[in-house]
Length: 245
Image 1 (tube, rainbow, N blue to C red):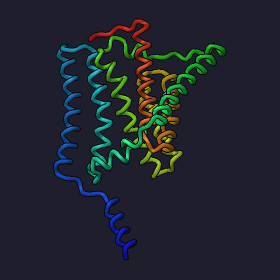
Image 2: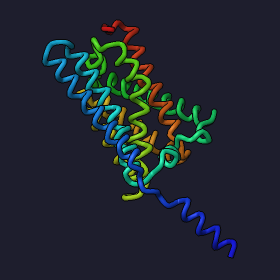
Image 3: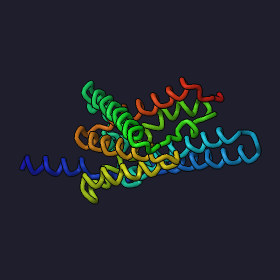
Image 4: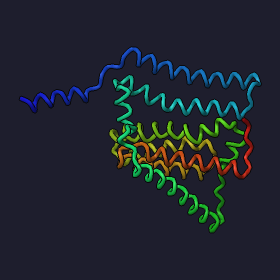
């Protein structure tokens, strides 16, 4: 009788609860707020209050935050509590450690090595692989550069690794989930209008997705992604990219 009782308790613990009215309203409010930011940035630009860099920055920030909003809203509406969401995404305290951080650093190093190899092949073959990152961020406000270096990677990892890898993995298998998620992530980076960024994003997506599946933690990919963005932006500032506060 005791094991049967424990089994019933375990099943009840795993069962998702219906989302509360407060949770639904919160999800609605977050989504509407982000949409308003997009609309506001467009209005300010059309009236001449902000230039193209500011308009692009505000729109990009809203889009990045919208990624996280999609994940949390979806999971809230499907009955997940905040604690369940954090566990599902691999963001609990027990999922972060020195080993996990080192894995994140290794992801960053792998991307750096990939960049060096690609540059060497490009130089040896005479086939140019131009990058457009500097042009994209030229004249961007300082707050946007900081957001891109620190906050945007977290938002993207929550959606593409924490959410999509798991969901797509259940639908098509883990390997397919990692590949499809990485491909969507890379397609998003086509906004840079550079094949080099597409290849780098796809490769990072594959490695980061694999790390997430193996460690059950989102922290490695977050650490690696932040390092990639932060070092890239810092390098652009160092070589003289203009910044408008």
